[in-house]
Length: 265
Ligand code: SF4
Image (cartoon, rainbow, N blue to C red; front, side, top):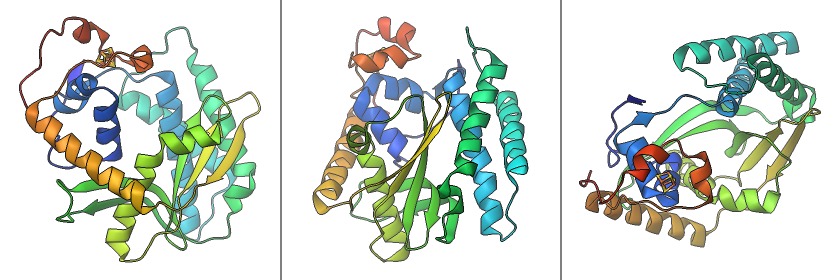
């Protein structure tokens, strides 16, 4: 595993907060020590699909729409570039199958009505930061797409048809963070967020999910969870939380050897 550095109190993001709330010890390995594990085929496909769609939307935004063939080429080039940046552990999966799976998903999006969304694009890969003094640390987020009316749109590449209620629940924190960030950046109340699921089936599906507006209770929950994060990190509350999520954890070796709390960050 390759270490990289990061101060967990320099800022908070959806990824940091969700990691901390899922398992504080995994958070410690991942976000405090900065240990990295080889990219999984699913992560690799997701990142390359994301890059292909980003190129497609950027061309639309610039008023020079891209052909489907060019968007697919952008996807394939991103796939190869990402492999160079970070090794992928394919295990019993074939690289060619993974490349084809992602290409099918990109194609399904390009053929869907969503690729012709008439709403204008306000920004792509929009990095926002809030230094609101009411928050315990600065808040950071990168929004995949912002459409006319300050609508945050996030793309999710997933393996099975989603249960929309469960997904809305699982993504509540992320959308609440986008709401706070957009509100801070524009001084306007953002529109409800949208999730677009790109489902990696043999016949891929593209599902748009318009979520309800973020409400005050959700924002209050987010602020409270941010306080809990900061207090927990300052105290060094990094202990194992065994559960279903351990199946996808790359740090089981280190976790098995854990006997007591590491030092505070
Ligand atoms: S194996 Fe489970 S309990 Fe241990 S660090 Fe990973 S997620 Fe946490």
